[in-house]
Length: 560
Image (cartoon, rainbow, N blue to C red; front, side, top):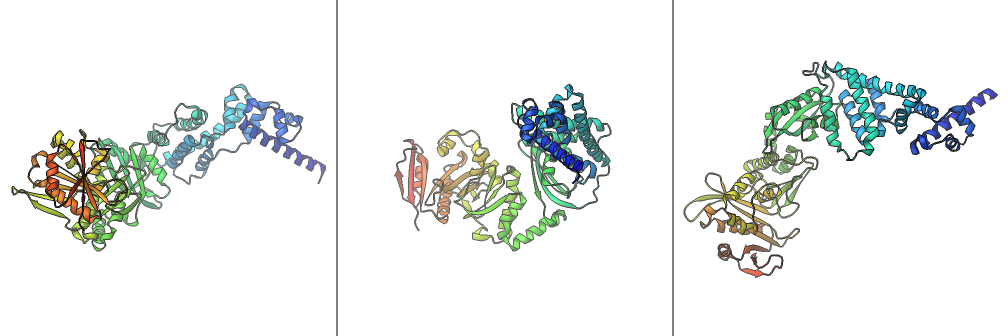
């Protein structure tokens, strides 16, 4: 090897070691705490070699900064600017998410030190300007890509948009670690999507997409206003998605459920859709669609109904698909978890419940009604397992009045609440042993059928619920003993409805395999004690220290 070539090779290797050592020390200690002697020691070179390479720490920082590769998120913007392979909006939203969760993926810690020290060193300023210029041009190029798609309002300046994108990343990298409160990622992405939406043209041209599209099922909870619906549709238009079907349903809390199937460019993933829609909605649920989702909706519904007639056992899976549940199981009526915001429990047969679960987005009332309606469809037109068809009774009371007793459904919740509001405080206290003023949330779902065991409702000729009966395990995990309880609204008391409900509850307890039933009764509630004593059961009082003297615990053995 010629001497000059060997010398050049050794010098190049020495410079590489110095740069690597300085970079590591700047990352670990910071520029202020790193001397050229420290760098020389870490690089295993003489101090004079570092001095020959860089006149001072600022010069060394400039050389290290100029040699840095761009962090991955910034590099993604660079790649998008050059190749434009991804959807521009998806690239920007992804960069915003990364900037919050991993600021170093946008701005290297050494770059930030260079930015902070640049005002005091002209040479360092040149390096910083050059790197910011590359970021600036990449951001502006991505904005121009959006503009080329007709998605940017003409009043928006490219340089202003580029400055916003660059400054947002730099600002997060500088202050995120020191902010007094940790910002929720979902809240941040909603804000970012809203800001990016403000760039959008009022009526974007060229909204067609020539590439492949895939179906997605989308469900959002948004404010119950026409403007909110329009914003959701506008966002989908900016994403170049075609709306196949769209339903809206107003809810009691001034929100609406917007339910749609959309044909979306295959370059968009679940995160991109969720983030974009989050700017207009409180909650967003996105699931990959099925191959036939782009077919005519009415035809699809009728075909699905025909399939369920042929195969009633498919009803639980169909109910899960209908509400985009994460999972479903068929549970014995006395087992599993009660209904909650994340768990939908539906009475399917007297012996079995369908339990649906979804962790990403709480179930809302209309979804419970839809799933329950689907199970009722199967009950009405097919022979579902375990004798589902026709389970219910028409009873004639002593005064000739006819009432219907049947399994409760989730959509009965409001009628159950109305029955409780019509009942006196004394009636409610005799049932629950505590003053109850409102019937909502988890408790109401359980009263209307979303618990282990079974719930029966009694309806008058006009469809009003006038009585409610529950049978459920005495304690969690209990398989031998069931508790039974009824409440009859005041106007229907003393007419024989309570005794008929109790008889059917005892029959259900036998059917569900319980050996004993218990009833908890206020010691002063002589009417309920008389009802129980008129049944063909022998009731035995039991002591229960948890109940106190005001409540009597009665147990009866169920005959085989």
